[in-house]
Amino acid sequence: MFKPRFSSWLVVASLALFASGCATAPRRRAAALKDKAYLRDLCDRHAILWQWDPVAQVVSLDVEGTKARLLVGSDILLLGKNQVQLSAPVSILQSSVMVPSDFKAKVFGSLEKTWTGRKEYSLRKVRGVVIDPGHGGKDPGARGFIGTEEKGVVLDIAQRLKKILERGGVKVIMTRDDDTFISLPERTEIASRSEADLFISIHANSSPGRGIQGVEVFSLADLGTLEKNEAQRQQNQQTMFKDLAMKRNPASVEDIVADMLYTHKQAVSPTLAQEVAGKVARSAKTRNRGQKRARFFVLRNTLIPAVLAEVGFLSNPKEEKLLKTASYRQKVADGLAKGILDYADGR
Ligand SMILES: [Zn+2]
Image (cartoon, rainbow, N blue to C red):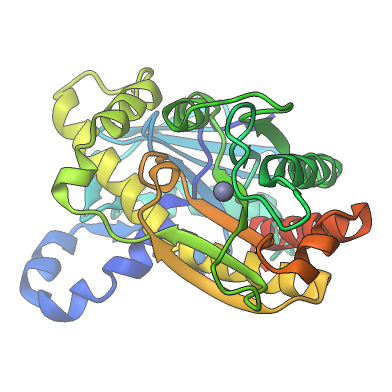
């Protein structure tokens, strides 16, 4: 079966971001586009779902058993068992995959024959999720008035979430599955080794104001150059790029891929955060404090789309009591799962 090593729909997201560039640099864009087309545009027009594995540099189209695979930098593509010669290599323009002008006829021309009558395909955007229950072991996290510890609450919610996601066909990797202390760097290393598409860290909040309650979900605020070069981030990048297929000019390819990963993450994570916050608030009937931006360590140093959910306030006596109950934790987990699965299914 079709198993991309890393299944981010990178280009779909980054294209949306770069669309504004069209208006600001029309002349350069026109010249660059002369003999090329955006793969995303072609696929949209033909209702074809596709995936881009930025690490292996492979673009895959896979519908009803017909596979097409392209390698960035190569003018040969594999269509089923056949090799097809293109007039020019597949390339990258401003973080988007570009294909030569004969691509459409040579690839879609033949693919469409086998795809007639079928307009909807359901390839998931998410195959693997890293669940990161905050704190653990010697680090209890926040503590409520009646002594409820964050580390236990979030582990239980994480385990419930794991069950639901697995039932939904998603592979789950836990950064901890018991009451163990795991350092923040280690959590991000687990994520970069995992080949997952999504990272969710689960926490419970604390505030000096006892009345404050509800759920809020963070995504990464934009990073400056220094933060992008943070040692842990570079190390995780090396882990993820270990198998990078392109040997030619590897440094610049890595830069491009790193840039695309960041663009994708920044385009996707806020939407996911908003989805998740809304679904938890609805499921647990709690206040939706919405989507927020921050530069938490685990958000900075993961390369895949990442969110950090603060599922409730242990400093609020009412919410602490709720968070102690299995039924409330289940509702929170249900909401988290719904947010993730709706995103995964592109709803
Ligand atoms: Zn916490």
